[in-house]
Image (cartoon, rainbow, N blue to C red; front, side):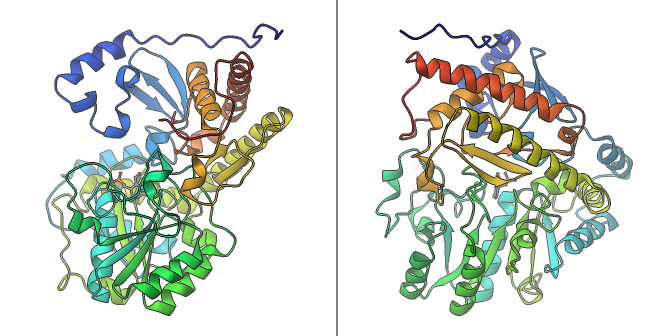
Amino acid sequence: MTAEPTTKPAPTLARRKQLEMYRRALATLPGGTNSNFRAWGDDTIYIDRGKGGTIWDLDGNEFIDMRMGYGPVILGHADDRVDDYVNERMRRGVSFSLTSEDEVKAMELLKQLNPWVDMARMTVSGTEATMHAMRLARAFTGKTKIVKFEGQYHGVHDYALISVAPNNMADLGDEDNPVGLIWGRGIPEIIAKTIVPARYNNLAQLRRLFERDQDIAAVIVEPVLGNAAGILPAPGFHKAMRALTEEFGILLIFDEVKTGFRFAKGGAAEYFGITPDIGTYAKAMGNGYPVAAFGGRQAIMDMLPSKVSHGGTYAGNRVAAAAATKTLEILRDTTALADIHAAGKRLQAGIAGVVESKGLPYHFTGHYPMFSVMFTDKVATEYRDWAATDHELYDAVAVGMHARGAMPEPDSREPWFICEAHATGDTIDRIISIFTDSLNAALELRAHGGLGAGAGQADH
Ligand SMILES: Cc1ncc(COP(=O)(O)O)c(C=O)c1O
């Protein structure tokens, strides 16, 4: 006979106002939101405000935010330093489709922090940045195809939505010959065919692809699988891939939308010691304001403005440029990033202690400022491995944390994000305590048959 559960039950969160808003929004916004990734049915969250590392929903529930808007909010919500600067600058007008000094400053800072970048241009979203990076690579090489890795997300343009996040790994096809899986309707086959799926951390397969196909312009890679918990490269993977792309005259695009200004001041390129050909940036670059950019080697960027199309009414708008300038200055001049890394390290140590005390198999993915925990014996090296993790346990823990006042993404594919504000006060200790209670509750649930037995196929 098993004992009755002993963990304090999670409080039930107030939901009335959010449910009302959901029903109202459903009449106007498909799914009640402006993004498929936020459409959680009756559980859709409607937000009131955020400050530092804390957010409040419409019903007044308070959470330590661990999603940080899918990564951009690197300093904290409503950061006075950034907001005051943006407010001051925007009084001069925000949109001219002419160029202001703010834009020049922002891109000078990007270059300063990523010294391998010779030139850069601003866009409004990461989606645009990766789209333009792919176009530049095609223009520069005169070739058509782009290799992308399974489980990597590069935004919502047609060239990016191939083999991104299926739940059923069998859909990805034969491991030696992965299929390009189109995500959703409306993407022409003819476009999808120009994107060649590959398996992360698999150099032998990449070499075979390069040998077989002479029409590959570039490889685009999230340096870690930032949209699959931050699965890490095997030691030497990036260096070997850099050498391989050079051997075949193929460009290397580092999609640093999540890792940029977060893994290190110079992003994952600095962290892993790699010099790509093109880099794409967004998220942490503007502390939550819609800011993005692409940049790279002089010879490639020299295709602009005369040979390759790029533009955008809002590209380099005042708000974006000011937000990037102030955020990048703070990241350059203060200990913010070091503090974020130290806080993430402390959080990992706390989580490790709790999980090890339970004797659970686990490993961390990602790096201190952006990481996740996978419950599994086998260290994940590619997207397909995620399916074999105990994400049922992860999900139960994440939902439990939410109920107890900390909000990681409920999907185990999204890493936890640390911001500067988390590094202050007792936030990290509170997250560890909330994680501990949630893990205990999930394990008790499992002991009582309320949760599946362990690792298995995804069902999100
Ligand atoms: C690695 C990566 N690239 C590109 C994008 C697209 O950026 P955006 O949502 O700003 O269009 C994302 C968004 O999450 C991302 O994680």
